[in-house]
Image (cartoon, rainbow, N blue to C red; front, side):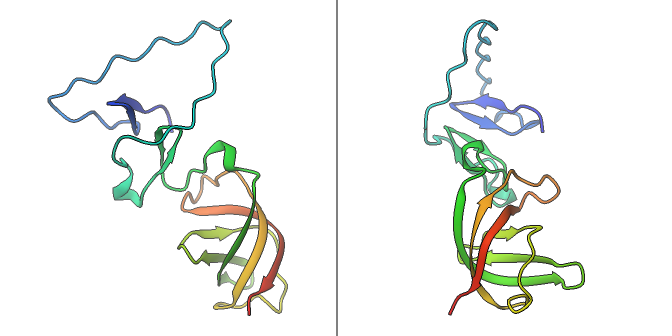
Length: 150
């Protein structure tokens, strides 16, 4: 995706210029290769979400990540999600689970035949995997266990 532009304490996505009439702050010099780079602190975003027109970004360490991009420290985390199963292609085993908050999840993990039907309410436990660049609006997970929610 390339680098963004630092503006007024936040980040603009690649190719987005700062608002006219205000010069962009000069970039800070990079540390010398022999100096360790300190990890970013856990900051909140002080600027408006530049990705709101695209569905909303994620505030991470004081900057904005594009929609669907998972913060690096959240990949490989175990999650528990309840949602509605949507079978997209039964023959190929392609499916999504729409969580109660609207987040979409998918996996290459197989779902048991007795659960595999559109509209089934399920709860799954899984591992969040790094974002799938082919569809940034869907969270990729490895299903550890899944069951019908009653």
